[in-house]
Image (tube, rainbow, N blue to C red; front, side):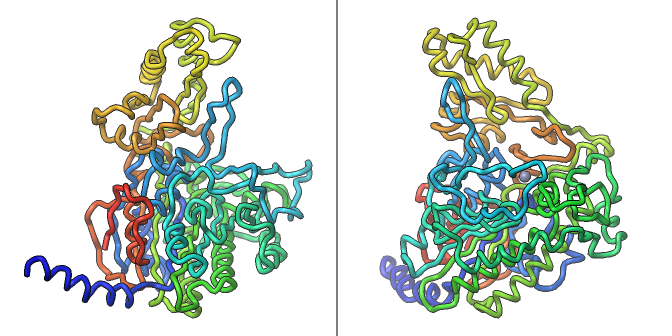
Length: 552
Ligand SMILES: [Zn+2]
C-alpha cells in the first residue's frame, strides 16, 4: 500500500491540476536595474492594476542573484536559463577574445553573421555624419537553453516565443535560440537581425513608420505628481552626483531635445532616458501579442519576454534616490497597468502567468553615501594597468615581440599564453603576481584567480558568487572585486556589477494562472525563475544540472 498510494495520487491529481492551470501565455517582465525595495518604496503612489498586481501576487521579497558579475547580459541570461555564466557563458556585457596579439572585444549578443534588420533607412542622422554602425546580433554566445527553447522543443510551431525589449541583450537572451522573434530598439526604431528573419514583419515596419521619437521632440518631461510626494520619499530633486548629459539637466521639468535643438543623436539618447522609451516597448509588446496572436488559441502555451531598460539608463545617471528614478517607476506602473488591461482584453489575465524580476540592482551615488558620512566611490579600472604591467615586466622582463603580458578585461586581467610559453614563464606564477598587485590597489576588496575558481577549496561569499560568473573557456585568469559601494565608472552617476546585496537583490513576484497569492520571505534566487516557469508551463527545467528549484 505504501508504495501504491503516492503513485495513485500522482496519477489522479497531477494531470487535472496541470490541465486546469496551464496558462495560454507566459509574460516575463524584466525591469533593468529595478531594486527589490522599489516595489514597496514607491507603492504609496502606484495605481491599481500595475506593479500592485505583483505585490499582491506570489511575492518573494528576498530574491537575490547568486552570481557576482551583476550586469545586464549575465542577469538576463540567468532569468530564462536558470543557470549562471559558468554554464550559460554570458560572462559580461562584453568581453575580450584571446586573439593575441591583437585582443578583440565582443559584445555578449554580437554576431557578425546576423546583420541588423530594420535600421535602414535611418530615422535620424547626426549633423556630423552617419551614426555609429552596429554589428549583427544573435544568441550564439548563449550556451544554455531557455524556457522558450524548452517550449519550442516540446510543442514546435504550436508554441510561439518572442522577446521584446529596449536593449538587444534583454530581448535576445530572455527569448533564446529557438525563439520565433526578438525585437529591440536602436535609435528609437524597432529592429531585429537576420538570425530571426530577413525583413521586419509589415506590422513592425508600420510601427517604425510612425517615427515615435520624433513625435515627442521638444516635449517636456515633468513629475507626474506634486514635488512634495517625491521629496518625502527621495529627498531633494537637485543632488550632487547626478548627470547632466543629453541636455536633461539635474532637475525637473526637463525639455526633451538632446540639448542641441535638433532631433539628432543626443535627442535619441534623451528619448531613451525618458519614460516614452518604456511606452514604446509596451506598445511593441502589444503589437506582437496582437499580430502574432499570442495566447489566443487553445493550443500550446506562448511566451513573451519583455525588457524595460529606461530605468537602468536613468538610474545610472541619477541614482536610486532620485526624483528621476521615482518618476520613471510611477510612470512605468501606469504603463504596466495599461499593458495588463490590454492583455486582459485580448487573452484574459486568468489565462496568463506573469513574472516580474530584474537583471541587477544598484547602489546609492557616492555623493549620497558621503552626505551620510559613509564610504563609496568611483574607480577607474585603467588605473590598475600601470602597476600590473610594471609588476609583470619586473618579474619576467619585456614580453617577446613587443607584445603585452596581459590585457585588462573589465576588472580582470587576461594573460598572454603564447608570450608566457615562449619565455617559459609559469602561468600560475603570473596569475599570482597579477592578483597580488591588484590586492594592493586602492578600493580593491579581494582578488580571485582561475586556479582558485577551478580548485575545490571553498571561497568567501564574494568569491563563491564570482565563481558562478567564471566560465573556464571565456573568463580572464584574474578578477578583482571592489570594496562595497565602490564601482567601475569614472563619469558622474552610479554603476553596478559587484557581488554585493545592493546589486544582487531584485524583485521576484508572480500573478495569474495557477499562482496562489502570498508573501514568501525565504531567500530565493533569480535562477529559481526558469525552473518555476518551466513547471507552470508543463516543461522540465531548461538546464538539468541547474541549482535553482521550482518555487511552487
Ligand atoms: Zn546598467
